[in-house]
Length: 170
Image (tube, rainbow, N blue to C red; front, side, top):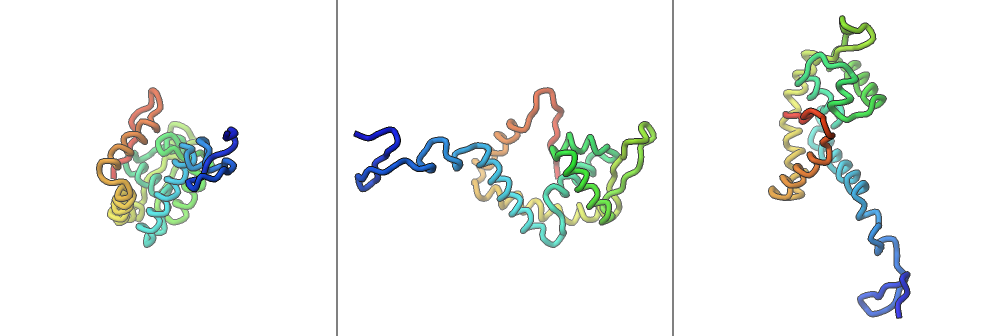
């Protein structure tokens, strides 16, 4: 008789259960799988956009700023989902490269309005075909039907009750 800590191998031999045989193994953890999928998508993005020296997060910020000129950094945090300290670092890097500009708002002297520079607009226009290739490469791993389903499921996962539609179109 098997104990709860044993399994039977294909050859019929008894063996102890391992972490990979447990139903709560890391390779079945939704959090872990989503994290790993994000890492893989970021790798694909980096490969496809290597000529532009821009990360996926930097692209998300550029794309969001292009859609909503004059946003505050607080608005960018809300729309991109990037945490406040990481976003501040991304903004600093993009400022140093001359890709974005920011200036104090007239309503609140503590708040900066972020806009794209001419160089930022050129970069965004130039990188879009590579970003579309990266998206297609990620989706090709899934097939068209599953890709659409995954996009729908992830969209539902990211929806917050009462939140406006934050989808980026590029």
